[in-house]
Image 1 (cartoon, rainbow, N blue to C red):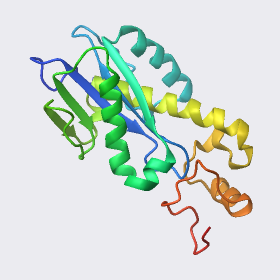
Image 2 (cartoon, rainbow, N blue to C red; image 1 turned 60 degrees about the vertical axis):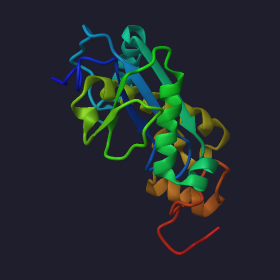
Image 3 (cartoon, rainbow, N blue to C red; image 1 turned 90 degrees about the vertical axis):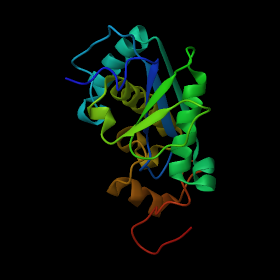
Length: 197
């Protein structure tokens, strides 16, 4: 059973991102504020759920959250400021879009930069231990997956409907054969060998 809150005195938002390790596409982040009485035993780290279950739970999270928001940053920004800074900036954007202002933030992982003057706590495996972070992970993952599935219509060679931009063998073979798109992260190691673009 996931914990509801890290602390209960302040309005708490959980934050997570999706797409850090991809070769292509944006990084997405989400922030979620859950009501004190909310509980759902099915919600956990998005990586442990099927795609169908993630979509089902997204509807539950969006319906029952006090506030939720999703944001993204594209490949050009990732190449400019690096993926870690982009992930943090995407989280900041998601937090800024919340309709209710959080008083405390819990962040999945071990790196974050303070947003405004809101206190925060970084939590390793937070998405497997805290309900609001797990909820944020589901939102970030499902919105990113949909974005990549839509991009697949324009760029079917790369099989983004299946790999979502992650470095699969098929994705790398397509890069080798067809080159890169504007959605590829040029600062990432796009091929396993010394081939460059």
